[in-house]
Image 1 (cartoon, rainbow, N blue to C red):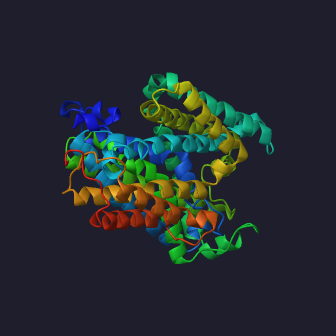
Image 2: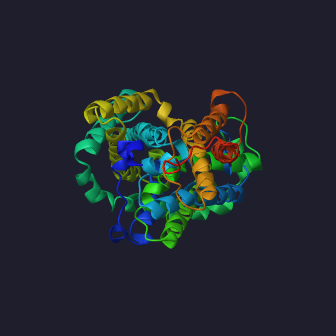
Image 3: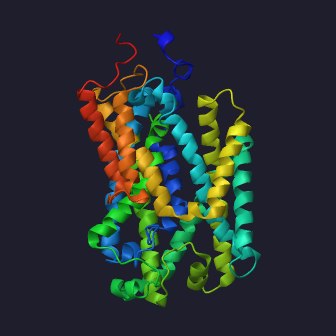
Length: 454
C-alpha cells in the first residue's frame, strides 16, 4: 500500500494523545482570537458592502438574527465534521483531504489552495492596518503614506512568518485582549444610544452613493455571506485544530465557545456599537474600528488614534501567521522551491492587493473565500458520513467526485461576484452544492476507491 501513496502522505504522523489538551486551552481561544481581529467585526454593521443602513437597515433585531444564524452555520456545517476528522485521525488537513480529492489530487486541494489564500488574508490585514496607522502621520487622505505602510507591513509580516514566527507567537496569546477590551469600552460608551436608534432614519442618512437598503431576507443573506465567507478557510482548518482535541466533546465545546459564541459576541458588540453610536450622534458610521468614529465616541482624537494603533498592533501576529501557514503549505507541496521565493512571490501579490485597494472590498474577498472553501467543507462532510462517520483514508489518484463537486460549487459561489447570476448567501449555497454533488457523484460510482481497496 505504501508504494501507491505519495510521500507527503507516507511521511505524515498522527498527533499522539499525550500531546492533546482540553478545548479551552487550544481550540476555543485560538478561534476566538480570529473573530476578535478588528477586520472581522469592523465590517459587521455594513456587511462589507455599501447598502444603505448595512445590516442595520431592518433594525437591530434582524441584524442579530442574521448574526446568530451565521454563527450556527459556521459551527455545525463548516467546522464540526472537519474538527472530528482531525480528532479521529490526528492528521493534518492536507492528508485528510486526500480522501475527498484523492492521493494525487489532495496534494493541491485543499492544502495548496489553503496556502495560496493566506496571501489574500495578508493583503487584507495590510490594507486595514494601514488605514488605522495612517492618522498617526498627519491629517488628510495620506494616500501615499497608507500605501507605504501597507507595503512595509506585508513585507515584514512575510519575513517574520518565515524566520521569526516563534518570537511573534510568544506575545500573540495576549494581544487578542486588546480588541476585546476596546469592544467593551466602545459598547459601554454607546449602549445609552440604542434607545434613540431608528433604522429608517439611519437609511435616510446614508451617503448618496450607497445602494438601496436591503429587505429582511437580504440582511440575513448578507450576514451569512459576510460571516461564513470570512470563516470558510478556518472551517476547513478545523481538521488541524481537531488534531489537538482529545475527544468529540473537545471538538464540540471548542466550536461552541470559540466559534459560535465568539461570533455572536464580537459581531453583536459591533452591531450594537454602530446602532448606539448613531442613536447618540446621528452620524452615519458603520465601522466601529474607524479612528474618527472612536475619537468621536471617546471625546478625544488622541485616544481614537491610540486605540487604532492598538488594534493594528494586535492584528500583526495574524499577518505573520498567514505567511507561516502559507510557507508550510508551499514547503509540503513545492518541496524543491526555496520558501523565500514562493513566499516572496505571495507577499508581492499581497502587496498588490493592498495598495490597489482590492483587499479592502471585504464582501468580494469573503465571497471568493466562501466560493473556494464552501464546496470543500460540503464535500468533506458528505465523505465523512458516507464512510461511516470516519476518515475513509487516501483514495486513488484524483477523486472525481470531489473535484467535480468543488468546481461546480466554486462557479456557483463566484457567480454573483462575476455577474453570472444572483446567489443569495453564496458561501452557504456553495457548501450545499458541493455536498449534494459529492453525494450524487459518489453514488454514481465516481468516487475513487481507497488505496487499500485494490
